[in-house]
Image: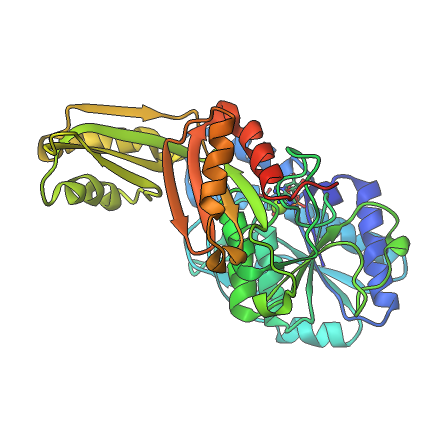
Length: 412
Ligand code: ADP
Ligand code: ASP
Ligand code: MG
């Protein structure tokens, strides 16, 4: 059972979480719980690090920002104990949950779980601090923002749990962010592959790495709400309460052409105008960016009428925008562009669905819908199960709502 920040925002909410845990314990389940920091706590800690020094040691950043989870894991253990439930809190290093040394966005490498398994078998509830691990240098690491989801799925895989329940402030995964589109519909089941795309493309309900891990280790993940009366939600088991099961595609009977729509503001656009159109020019643009570890996403190239020059447009992560411009400026003699332009007020809207593999015309429908609203498309990318378009960010809501209706996803 994993509980996110809003689910453990204060003592009342932690007491409510404890009742969810009690329900499962009373039903005879062995329970490991992963908790996030109280809502807003991690942001506050990140701010403090930046205020202390804009450029700071990543090892100390991790020492600081991991502390929120230490508090909530201890508090939940105390509350459970006060309800007569045997419970113990665990920090990442105590388990130990080993990661690589990429402080701030470390990857889990292995989890020692013999001790946890023994305690679970003896009926003790393990309350694990999410988001943190132990690096090879014997220091605390963190798993990247939203990383408690990943702690939970990794732990579920390690202890071979029947399921990983992600309790949050919405009662499942919706066709799009229900806070942007109130007509969004809750999905009963989503395949790992679709969820991976949705999460990577902006649906921040699950951290991307948690979905990757769930897919690789075949951990069934169930997204559900921690709000409301825990005892009214029914038991976990064959009859699942309201929520969304992330599972194998084969377990999904009814496949829609489009499963969901996501929006990501984390992109910026860069355009190079009048680049000489000759072999090697794309390499001269993208090799220096790759060497600077800048991840390029969408790429569009258009050729001038006389065929002598090309315009190249592409996107980079918004956080790498300034760095990308300076890398390209430095390489300008090699590339030979006439003009370097960029835009940060852009958004990537993506349409995801495994049904696209076997259904023609899904992209055409999107382009028509956006044209009808007068929305200009700056760049397009597609893969087997997704279509992404880059548009002006001012049109985010209009675009998401229109596409949501066009594909028949509105809750009626
Ligand atoms: P937690 O603190 O529990 O980890 P998060 O804020 O990380 O919660 O994730 C839950 C939020 O994800 C919801 O409040 C919702 O606004 C957002 N969200 C974005 N896209 C979706 C989607 N497709 N379905 C459900 N929630 C979504
Ligand atoms: N508390 C961490 C964060 O805010 C981890 C999490 O909530 O999953 O990013
Ligand atoms: Mg989260």
